[in-house]
Image (cartoon, helix red, strand yellow):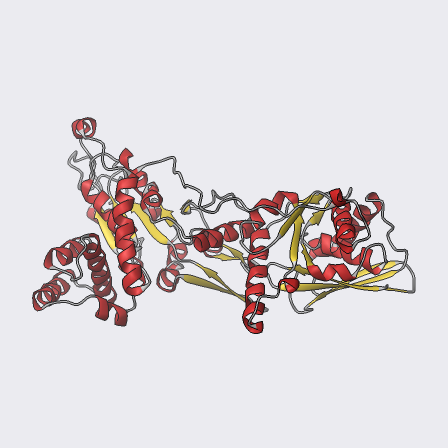
Length: 516
């Protein structure tokens, strides 16, 4: 045998397209050539693979080796192709059974001694395999188990990849273990102890625990109410108040009152963090707090090989922007399109990648440069033009896209000391979950995602409600976008109240959050 094929996958964006590693041995001076758009880490794999094969007590063929990574027009990056390249070389040189490779997919980085090191994107690879299996099942009209490939990954990635139900994952410590397992499966090795056991998935339905709680917030009933509305309808929120009034404290508690992630949502979030090589507590809602020195590329994603940015890492969770006027205006403006479309498309000369960006924006700002404008202590000495210049750092179109504008006054020390503990996150989350369930049953999406046509259907208004809106539109100078956002917030308030109709009190409360 001088030719072998090995199944593996690359990672492009958040997807894992299939890659076929083709290895051919031919006569000629010893050389190893890798073709098929390999980037630097892939080109360097030939040195790692050579040492790993020799140190695993196999023979590295002293012939001309040509390795093709198909499809040839798909960029390949990272060291995850080390293991499939090594398996292809061993199969092409006749040291392992080449036919058995059809039943497996391989990913993993090799150390020089043959050990398998942890790689990024294993969860995305497992999800891609499951999608491929489901598509094959649907096209055949039956479930053909013989066509489902097992996934062999480094032991450090096995538990993560095994979270995907329906994909059999094998975790190996080194190249020798992989080859012994294949020998047992092909019948060449009778010792069953050399067979790698299938990784058992941990329970997806684990109880999520947050270390913080909304009960930590004392007083601030108006702001707490706005936080509950934002959680129930997926709305964006802006806190405006002096330093120390609790803006950051309340914003950090928003994930604790959001509805729990479904199994599929939890896998999607974990897959994103796996590709980004960022730590993540499985099952929790992401909370990303960014610093005002962040660049536009770091915020929305990008690079020569596009990587997910903060808005994608906050997908199905919260993006918190503290001290909003301190951010570069050009950086903030890139949020305008993702806030509407819930995704971001990164275009490059040779590719275009779309990342999810379905996040909740929570922002906080001071009312003036010193932070105390409007405070009862009269500590503010900012001139009117300074205040106007400070507030103008945030553009009108961006502010118009934020549903709830909430003033957060500083609490007097006596009120803070005597204030009773508020409701816990668990109590508030139950109300939020009930309102969320009403929205899913009615329209299969949260209120913040309703299109104008869907809003006309779901927000039936009587004549008094229409009159109130007309008056408010004239006084508050609402844009068409602001008008629709008021209706979406009112619809959420009605859902929290268990009402099928938007009543005058619901509409009045929604309008109160656009008055700043």
